[in-house]
Length: 422
Image (tube, rainbow, N blue to C red):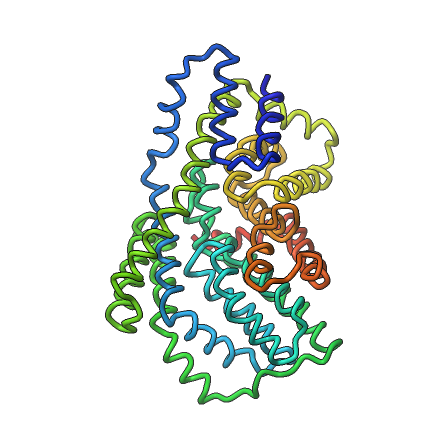
């Protein structure tokens, strides 16, 4: 029964039904066939979303929207240009470093891609970069938004698996920096091969001015994440502080916000939150049914029975997550699939926090690979570029992500190093 339910779910998704609705229809159908009272559907929907921790999701989304609507992105880009613009292929490095800074503020790769593609792709074209290269580096660097804290997928993972969100946020720092460095290294290789220009020479005075202009925006995520890591606030409280700080900056200091603009940001936040919460609610109902059918244990037994080799089992988990990431959006993949894989991860000794980072890296690759490729499609739709054109360079950056994924998968210290000091 449980396996037939999963087949129905994926069939509905392939028919392009919204994932939240697909989860609810599948759950209701499964419960009806199992002769379970359908009154349990709304009850599970309520209890699945009735969590104070989940309130962090709309707050982090709103914080990112507020920061994107102000001069913060301009100030951060100026700082990134002063820091790395002097390296060969300067704008591509500025692109990556800016995404690393912006990742601290939004927690959403799609949101970062939408903003950065409008800024960087036209400017990089003007300076002689191939358009497909500009789109590719913009798309992959936006993926840092779900690795470097705050990360909305990590919040969902923490809620789904009852794992400390604080520990997950800490664990994402080093892999995020490694991934950003890997993108810059790959960009440098293309810069040498194709003769990409230097943005401008290094000037200490210019760096000082850029740092002064960006210090207040950069302090917002430092305070938010720092307060969470030090245990002063919960994830929801940290998100609330971030919203308040971003609002003060945009309304009082930079004066970029107006009532109409703020209203539009709230509407956008409500829409994005509704999509996520529909997925959360639908998966809560379906997840309860699958748990009752002991499907997670069956999946762990099936995958674990393929091989007893620890390395092969981790590779098998990664392949499974990569394939699912190609067809499911990150939120749905975490809520539906992670509970199925968690027993196997625990069986082979993977720390839940380390496993969370592995999951996010895999889903980050899925955001770049068709048919879903949510981040890549966002950049392509913004720039008018075809996916096959973006993949000319994109495939090499995806290969770079594979290398980092393998490094993090087989080197737990990359994710757990900071936690050893706690």
